[in-house]
Amino acid sequence: MSEKAILSAADGFGRTITAVKLLLGVPSPAEKPISVYTKFGIYGYSIVVYASHLDYLAAVTSAISPSLPEFDGDAIERWRLTNDLVIGGLTQGFPDESRIARHESALAALVAFPTLEEIARRVCGRWDEDGIPTSDVPRSEGIVTREPDGTEKPEEFEGRRRVVFLSHKLQLMHRALDPGLARILESIDRASRRSPIQGDTQQLAPLYDRLQYFRDRWVHGRKFEGFEALLISHLVALIYFGKLGSRAAVQAC
Image 1 (cartoon, rainbow, N blue to C red):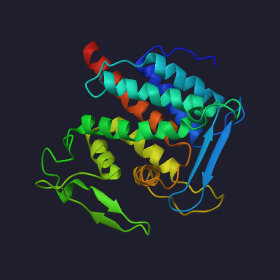
Image 2: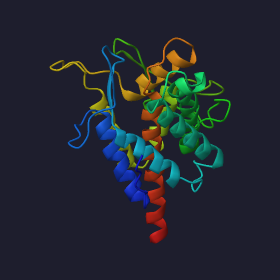
Image 3: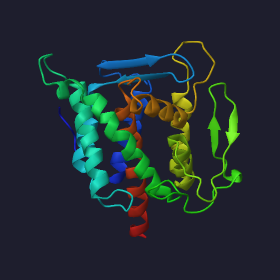
């Protein structure tokens, strides 16, 4: 890999946006995909991976540091481990490698999902380490559970009702983000909801709901899609570089 160093928070954020666009299918004029993941249905996806994604992850791994409250040493180490496993999983060598080497992408997802959940908790501070709300979450906050048929059930978390579902945690995190970063994630959500079938106008489930679905399928031992950790690392990078850039702007004032 020929990684180009990330020089600043703005550089990291911009390169992450470019990498996400490529993941979601914006064609690259300079390279051919090394892997494509496609699935139909409400929890479907279309993910395209290029060699430049591996260079990007290597550059991110070298650039990140525990310089934000939400990203302490443990979070950074787990994120780096996720990236190392993703890169290893996408650059597999010979089939006689160790079983661990052959399943690095699957292991990466087992690291990535709890890392994302913990970062979400630290970003918004709306539940403690046991899932107990730190303050009531009324229905007016707009947190919902979405059924496969599109039905939305408003949720509220009061007293000791635990916040358990990843989709709820990500919705609460989203509400705590800088409005500009939240809008960028919303645009990514819209782009990711396009059906992989050309001409099909049916939208896929929202991104946070699909992450919940993918997480449950893999953690409960049913199915692993293959791209989960790669996508999560890009989302974490948006949050990291977005927050780092905001802090730099404040300190410069």
